[in-house]
Length: 434
Image (cartoon, rainbow, N blue to C red):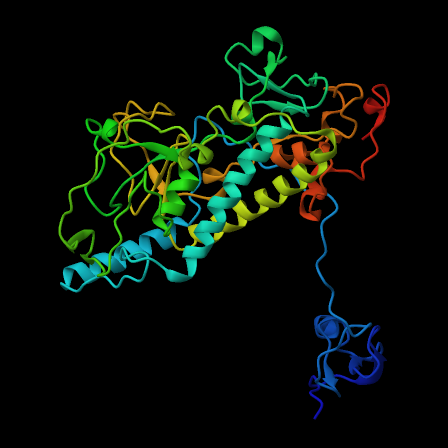
């Protein structure tokens, strides 16, 4: 049935839309000679049509378009120091969950907790934790050996790192004395801590036990946050024992009503024995522990290091989806556990207002395992990078750039940020490019 406008004369007009073979639409438009023509201009623009086939049009080639690797991607933004980090979880969802917990607490109902939120291990993630710890050891070993072969430069005023024969000349130093040097970096020889940024956390025998206070902070060991995450996920290290619960804890709101009894916690580790296994999980003096490799073994070590880096990142992402890790919203402090500690050592933005306490929020993978992006150098033995060509250069994580210059094959997901398809102009031509 065709719907017509009253007191108007219409002329049928059939048209086939481009890109379809069977979808035909019949339009009815008023005649120009009609007395109500000008009043029907809006109706003519809207169109009165009858669809003869209601099936949605299919793509021309009959195939869905797949999303490929982008050609170029932007660099990750640098977070300003005078602002708080954004919440990884929207604040609306955080408040919604808090209101639901408060409502259950007012009704006197226990908070439903699933492993590992109730203190019980997740059996499926125990092998993942062991794989992450083994890959972490291989990563430290590989980076320490590659530092003997690939030169690394670090700025002593800021966190800038450069991997090449000669340090770059880009004037972007963010140190305190950077303006006096017109943004030029003050380069020194880099170390393994410039490639693998040391992110440490307090080791707790019972993450659900008493919180760490400022006065008792020296009673707890500081170990890499990745190692602490693996220990709480099921890894057994004799030097760092952890409590394994068989019965879940019970909570009403934010209050624990049944913790399974208090157990006396062991004291901090006094010393490290020679040949202990915990030496391999830390980057301290790794450059001295692992000597330079042979020239023929460098590409193999670089490839193993690259694979270990991917395993660590993938495994940490899996573990953090289940186990709670907290990060300070102002500084780089990390705490592995259901809630943060009370140590007053935050010296970041407006720490006086918080009495040095940390502003805890949920951590991201990049905060626990920082990528530490550096400039990508296409020719490590060529001319240094210039400030005038800064927008044409790419970036890559420090471990990826180190392994790439040592002869490793890089995954395709890092290529868009490296900007390998951009032709570098000469210094004089850079001003002529829009």
